Length: 359
Image 1: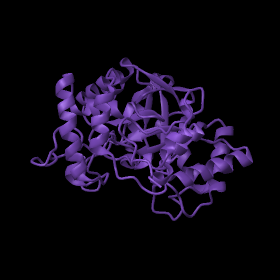
Image 2: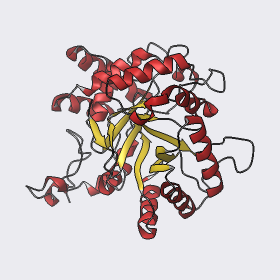
Image 3: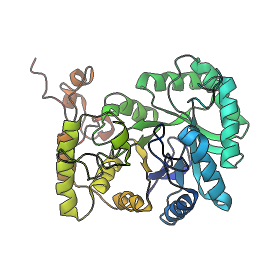
């Protein structure tokens, strides 16, 4: 297993994070994914531990608390092995304050998560989305309070825009609050929006990037193409989430299959290996509903894609350049001194979006 620091902290986490959205929840029309029962969770945790994974991610809304509950039941004496990340923000009751990031809901949500997880602290407590109602100062001060109280070790955010992340970091610095160590975002070979503004902000501020849905809801499983629909029972068969450009998906799958065949491995292994190669990526969250899914994720750790393979994948999936990114790349090489690699743009092989401006 490979490990990385959890953002700008001294804590080390495995570069594969065990995603637990499917744990404990009963499959239904309202909850189309799930069904991993207690016995399966116990086996998956054991296999993940044996492989060196020490990081798992959950949330209070996963199965309306079922994911946290089953993890608390199964971990037992293995609690100290795990760096546990959980999240709050979503609705957890019918009351008007059973949702959001107010100080009131934060304390209630954290105490409920601790009870379900059967622990007296969580290692990483994350806001699950941006709350447009609660002032950031209120949320960040409340988060700092629970860190100082010993209930939380580190804090993070999820699904933030770059400006929201930077504003939060500025408030924390100005007030001496604990700062976000991580941001959890959708990042995939076929979902590269974070590269426009969020990823440069993350690299600049030394925040760790945790990537959810690396296979784009199963579209990069290797079983979906123009001729075949998602299999019954999979997330994609119920809901088109996360939304992606499917033409780009099918082009990417074709290249992934070619490389997987040459490497004698699987399509999802190549997709995860590509993500692990990206700058700023701390850990990739790998959700699974079967123990066998863990194997393809683990295989990605030992895959080091060469420049030609990275170039093929990047060209097949690169989104059009957006403003102001495209204008800031004009003549960028003239502002990049030789011998100062830290000054060079972080584009990957073949990814400079446009030729230098001729004027």
